[in-house]
Length: 114
Image (cartoon, rainbow, N blue to C red; front, side):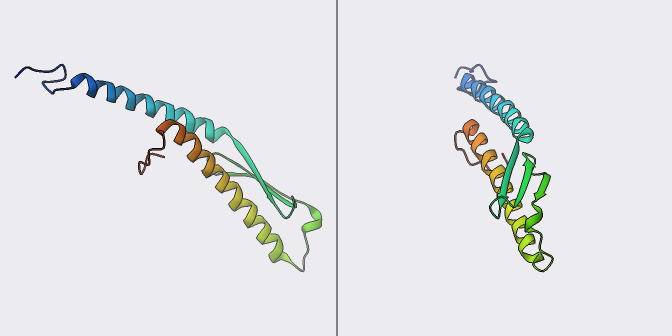
């Protein structure tokens, strides 16, 4: 029985290649995550009456409310518009993250990877 190149394990070269590929994927993912975190995504509700901006870290950067939507007798509507815009912008951030990471992982669904 001859020894392979990787500590006596057959296919040592393949193991080394897999390790290099995993390291490259990890570096690519870190770069993509950094790029995503710098993005600013915007969403609105109520026909643009309420708009929300968030970054790729899922941090809300800005909420804009048009004065004509502010009705002291209908605060619930304003609250609903804010919630709708915030939820939508966060869904967009998640979708962008999944899309960009999917390009790197080739669609692999590895829990905890993203």
